[in-house]
Length: 298
Image (tube, rainbow, N blue to C red; front, side, top):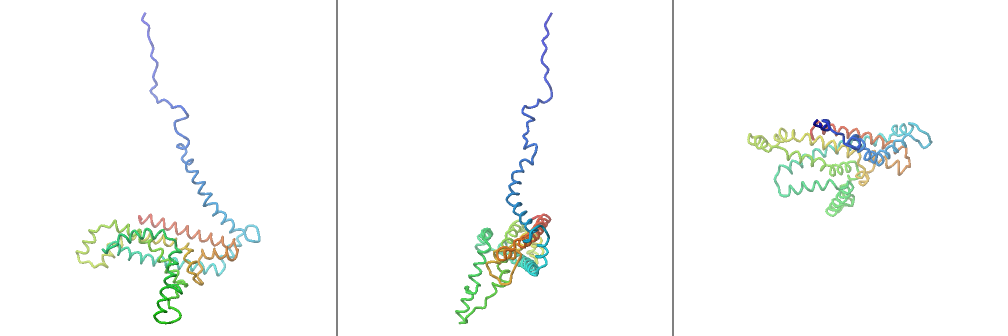
């Protein structure tokens, strides 16, 4: 009899790779990969912030209570600092929007030598510290600055007329000077995407420059204006160096109030209360900035 040789059956299913499923624990659980940076972020940023919040509920008398919040929020100094912070931030933002829009229009649409160099300098200007701009303004408009020195040399008077730098208007001027490039930069990016054919058609139809700006350029610039203005508002709300270096008398913002209570008065619970309020306002405005940027498409 002929011997029948049986062949081994080949399984049609996929063979399982050895070593426990073929996928690493990191691939199966993506949160494992995100855990180290989250822990680092919590240790570096969130833990100190948690200590500030904890200290704000611990008065000098001991224990845990809301008394520090009642003392600070009910004080006249806090209300004045809050009002000063708000109107300086809003005024600086409006000034930056107006000046930034005009400067961006000139750089983008008025042909003149050096326009590209100025646009590049704006990128460099964004890296300057705020106190550097304040020192430059002190050299020009300070009590013994160049402007007052030139005035006294010409007129022979003892004092010059430029004494505004130590007032709230000096802080406003310094903030507008420093933060305007934060509006110009996104506007230049938006203008670079603008179809010049629309401008040529509008000009060919006899539209004046003011009407072209209002009907053609401004609608395209609104997203960049909204994003830049929201960012400047947040930055001005937390500005400390400009107010400190101008030495403006009677100008106390929320960051300056934190400095005063912590360093000058040694009132650490009160300083932490003001810091917590400032952080809450900043986070709220930043959330508004994100919403505006997302809806505007900037």
